[in-house]
Image (tube, rainbow, N blue to C red):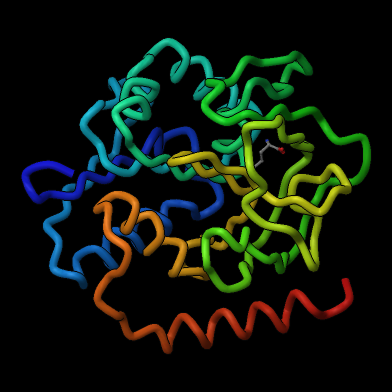
Length: 242
Ligand code: GLN
């Protein structure tokens, strides 16, 4: 972070904003301001260049066709690579997560190259679409409470050796491979299948992103009673038989 300003970039709201994932941007923005940070938010449409000076980049979920268009444009605009090389944080959901990997299957049934920022590969699942509430334990190295979210995807994502599973599902499908993993991350790049929006349901993940961006171990506390009530409600929902 430079100039004491946190720069949040919402990548392609015109293509990847179908499942309310914009809420992730709002949550990080709000929690940063609550902590007294000066925040600049930039929404970058798919006909605009991605800035390289962002601290945290968000990419949301989307339908198969906009997902392909977004992947094409992100490959052409290499600025996201540059930002990640500069240490930027990326948090991507579902279609956005798949785009960060090596490849996924597009709306034409073809293998579409991703950005290779995460060591994951996505194929089209043969079984039923993965839809429903999820409860998962986040990688203990990240020191966060169990994750709740809502998944809705056909893609099945396999992790390569340099990607760590973001979480392990107690309830739900997650990456859909049957190995219990959900999402993936490396040093500063995170991918998850969780909608919700996931940061509204799991605000401590938002704080993790802020801590990484600020390069600090702790943040001033925040009043999370509202979020806790929502989390508990969703955990109960996830535990109901389908
Ligand atoms: N189109 C992708 C899939 O079905 C991503 C869906 C999404 O973003 N929710 O796997």
